[in-house]
Length: 148
Image 1 (cartoon, rainbow, N blue to C red):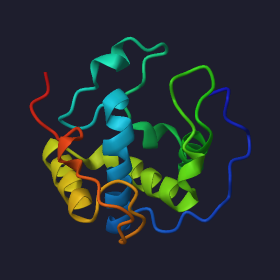
Image 2 (image 1 turned 180 degrees about the horizontal axis):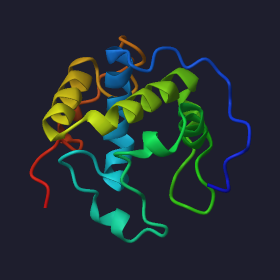
Image 3 (image 1 turned 90 degrees about the vertical axis):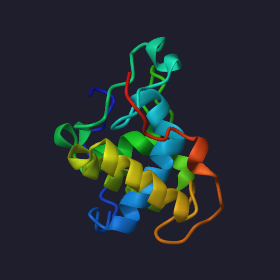
């Protein structure tokens, strides 16, 4: 991707395999990403079909990008696309999303549904680590169901 700098942030990411981080990243993904990028068992919403460039399915993005590259994309967005910058979420929250993306290739629809339930039980979107910072009801947000 041409818009990525040659040197990515060397900020400490911590343990990206930590379940609490993956669940926290799931929370953000459900609330802000699945509508365009889809998720296991969840189709992208109609708005994604009209976007150019079309948002990619992220199931295997971790095999094409390093964690540092994923972090940079999340923090700065991608110019001339619909991918926003999420820098206002803070680095720990962004690393949680990277943890989720790293876990995504091994996640099927049933496992994604379980992650979304865990995220909702932990407090929903904007939780950081194991602590919830707000109680968003995630039941209305992109719960897995039959894919079209």
